[in-house]
Length: 244
Image 1 (cartoon, rainbow, N blue to C red):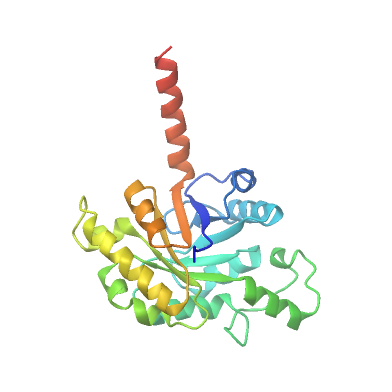
Image 2 (image 1 turned 180 degrees about the vertical axis):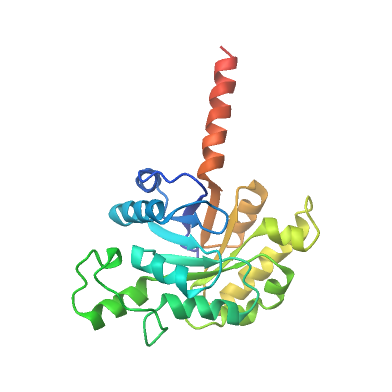
């Protein structure tokens, strides 16, 4: 049976609140806001998340780490999910789950007169259940150790799924320029996610890897970034104008 695929892109630096609406209009399902490498302040994050919630686009935050401080604040801003980079063990991921999910699934702090409830939380017990059901948490697998521990990572309670990070994995495997180890890792990720009944994803703009992901029935494709898309658009425009 063909998997129901969701398409997203990375938002790396541009804190433009209209961007989520443009992505939604173009048929995207989610964005990953890069808080690992990106230089966003809280006001910028809040604006993007608010706009995404308004147009129905899922926001997944790529975290700097699995600490409570960031996860709590981002949850209260209305984050729809989290991606933990450099996930190498079930314990790494379990902390992210703990801070992002309310009891009994986790231990998220409760402060409901916030953006995540639309400032109208309703009955607390009902809201906590709804919030837990909608919160998505992913492990980003991008090291040899993460691949070695993938099966255990995917056993983590309430973990939604896993994304492959091919660039850092290539560096860790010392195979930059050689896609064969990454293609093999994708096969492993697909098989282990299928075993765990969880979606497999990848973050890439490489057409060979995207074709492989489609063939392996990856359910989450995060393709390129707003910076790459903007740069490609400028280059295309320049090429067009140069031909006149």
